[in-house]
Length: 405
Ligand code: HEM
Image (cartoon, rainbow, N blue to C red; front, side):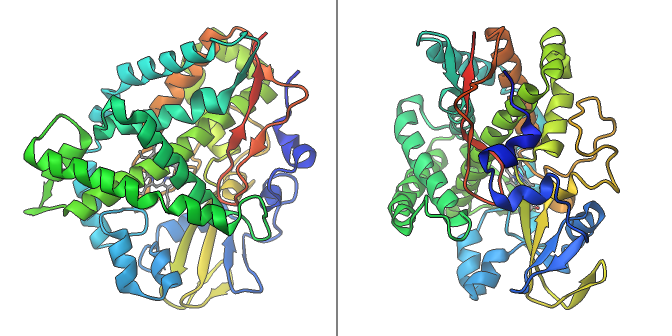
C-alpha cells in the first residue's frame, strides 16, 4: 500500500500552517496579518524580495533582539543572517573553500557511510525499516562531521550535541500553542550548545597549530582581500553548516521517499533508471519543499503586490506556496519528475542561494539510489503514519516506517 502524499494534511494532520499549500490557495500573493507580519505566497513576489537585499534584510535576529550589536556577535562568521557588504565578503571567502570540486570529492565517503548505515539497518528481521533513525538523520550529520574533520571516535559524542541543537531549534520554531516541546526542553537542549561550540573551538585551535586536509583547516587558512576569519567566525560557521545542513537534507531525503511512495510509477521508473534521481530530487524540492518558510525584515517603507510593507515589518516568504504558484508552474499539484525547466525556489534565490545545494543534491542521489537498490520492495507502513516536525518552516518526517517486503 502506498501513501498519497497530497492527502497527508487531511489524513494525518500535517501542521495546519501548511494547509495553504494543498488545496487552500491564498486568494492574494501577499497578505499582512493582524500582527503586521507580511506573508508572501506568490512566486514572483518571493523572487522580488529575494532580489532586493537592500530593501529586505536577512538579519532577522537584529530586528527581534532590538540590539544590532548583540546580533552581530551572534552572527559573526555565519551567512544566513548576514547582509551586504559583510555577507558578500564572507560568502566569497566561504565559496572559495566550499567548492563544487570539494563536494564532488565526497562521493566515495557518502557512498560508504550510506552503505554502512544500510548494513546496520538490515540487521533486524528485515521486514521493516524506520528510515529516519536508520538513514536520513545520521547520514547528513556524519558527512558534515567528516567534512569538518571531526574524528570518527568522537562521532557519538558529536551526534548527541547535534541532536540537542536540532531539538532546541525545533522547539524554538514550534508553532504557537504547540505543547509537544515545552520551554524546559528548549532550556535543556540549549545547555549543550556551549559544549558543541567549545568542542569546535578546540578543533580550530588545533588546526591553527597543526593544519590537516579538512574544512576547518581550509576555513582557518582562507583569505579574502588580505583578511582571515576569526576563530569565533570559523566556529560559528562550522556550527551553522551543522545545524542547517543536517536537518534540511534529512527532510529532503524523507520527502523524496514520501513522494515516490505516493507515485509508485515514478518509484518503478527510478528503479529501472537511477539517472532519473535528479528530476525526482528537483521535483521534491518544489512539490514537498523541505524549507517552506524563509524570513526577511523590511529596511524601509515599501510596497509589494499592492500591499504596504512598513519599515521593520517581518516578511515571511512561503517557499512551499510559491513553489506551487499556478502562475509559474503548469499543473503545480502534480508531482512530475520530468518537469523541465523546474525553476523551483526550494534552495532560495539570489545572493543567498543555498551554499549547501550541491552537497544536498549529491547526498540525495546517493542515498535514494542505494536505498532502492538495497530494497527491491519499499512502501509506507499501512498502519503507522509518518510523523512530521511540529514547525511551520520545514516539512520533514521525524519518523517514517517503511515495509521492505
Ligand atoms: C535539501 C537541503 C537544503 C535545503 C532545502 C536548503 C534550503 C536553503 C534555503 C531556502 C536557503 C536560503 C535562505 C534565505 O535566503 O534566507 C539556504 C541557505 C543556506 N544554506 Fe541551505 N538548504 C539545504 C541544504 C544545505 C546544506 C547541506 C548546507 C550546508 C552544509 C546548507 C547551508 C546553507 C547556508 C550556509 C545558507 C546561507 C547562505 C547565504 O546566506 O549566503 N544548506 N538553504
